Amino acid sequence: MNYYSLNKKAPNTTFKDAVIKGLAPDKGLYFPETITPLPASFFENIDNLSHNEIAFQALQQFVSPDIPKAVLKTIIEDTLSFDFPVVQFNDSISTLELFHGPTMAFKDVGGRFMARCLGYFNQDNTNEVTVLVATSGDTGGAVASGFLGVKGVNVVILYPSGKVSDIQEMQLTTLGQNIRALEVDGVFDDCQDMVKRAFLDETITSKIQLTSANSINVARWIPQLLYFIFAYKQLHKKHKDIVFSVPSGNFGNVCAGMMAQQLGLPVKHFIASNNQNNVVTEYLKTELYNPKPSVQTISNAMDVGNPSNFIRIQEIYKNNFDSLKDNLSSYSFTDQDTKVALKEIHDQYNYVADPHGAVGYLGSKAYLKDHPNAHCVFLETAHPTKFLDVVEDVIKEKQPLPPQIQAVMGGQKVATKINNYEGLKGFLLD
Ligand SMILES: *Cc1c(COP(=O)(O)O)cnc(C)c1O
Image 1 (cartoon, protein in one colour):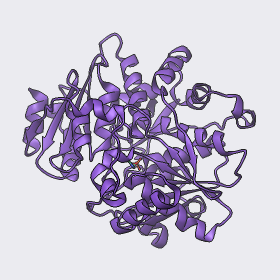
Image 2 (tube, helix red, strand yellow; image 1 turned 90 degrees about the horizontal axis):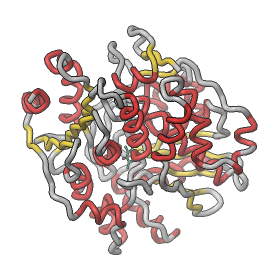
Image 3 (cartoon, rainbow, N blue to C red; image 1 turned 120 degrees about the vertical axis):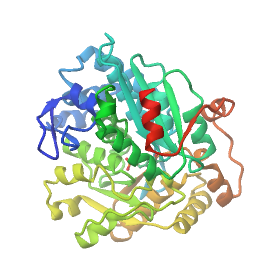
Image 4 (cartoon, helix red, strand yellow; image 1 turned 90 degrees about the vertical axis):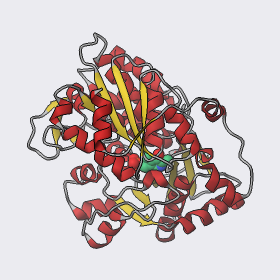
């Protein structure tokens, strides 16, 4: 598969090159040249396919020939070594739990898949790369864990000091080896700006091959389409009109769901559930796209003012507003709404959600008002204990820490403090 840049001013390139570069030379996001639907028999026969078989068939076209079949099989086995259960609340609502991976965030799948692809490309040690990533919380941990010990790959993670949860901070500062953390005196947008500047800085890029590990990277983004197929497998016998409500920040996850739909997955509709960072909710109402600085919320992994992947979504629907609206609804909710939802989910369904999942639940409820026959699946994108303060405060119940979380809490935090771009540059060139 070759990939083109959505800015259309850079040459098309291979999967390998797209993964190593992250962003195209014209700063556009890469997009696959073709998407070939899976045969109808794939979906008819899905009950007989394992997760690994589903993944192999769904991903092969996007990575071949750069990743040979046998290698892809191994990468998939390593990546998907945990479960993706659907928990049904009632006839109208289910949740798809995406938090059973090593860092208990849905980003584990993309992080692990990308790390293993880069590891394969770098096995002869000629392509040493530095993964540079800014995190508002969950990306950092998933990337750190996914890339830990991968040869020839150095990872540098920037996070805003005091703005990530204690558990998230431990997940990205305690691993050591090829993972280094930079604690930035600022907010997430400052971290993001510094990363963007570094990618444009020739004094750095002439010496170091930098790549990104957020969802702009095709190897982080594309494997996320599997979640939607796994959910379909668990639900299709009971429910026809399956709608996914995706708590969205950079819109990588919901856009991956749309890729699954392009592969032929019978999805009725998508809901992008947002917190107060609501550029897309507003766009669908007004057809005006107005990026804004992000505002801080209790679902902080979705505090994004200008979602990078929205341009990919527009590409999928050929920049046709009506066709986009046929496939996507969006709602936005306040922190107060989110807390009420956390409590409601706990009291009515005896289920503990995290704030991001709670926003997804609210999106499902809003959609069901006008579409009572749909079955809405909201994605639970993080384990509730990653947002312990908010969750315990709302449901007034102590939460036991899962083993993955307990394991990092005993670690030793190692982070380098930086105040500005010069600090980052000095660190990288040192
Ligand atoms: C990253 C993240 C999101 C948002 O996902 P996008 O692909 O950026 O839209 C939602 N919830 C959690 C917990 C996350 O970590």
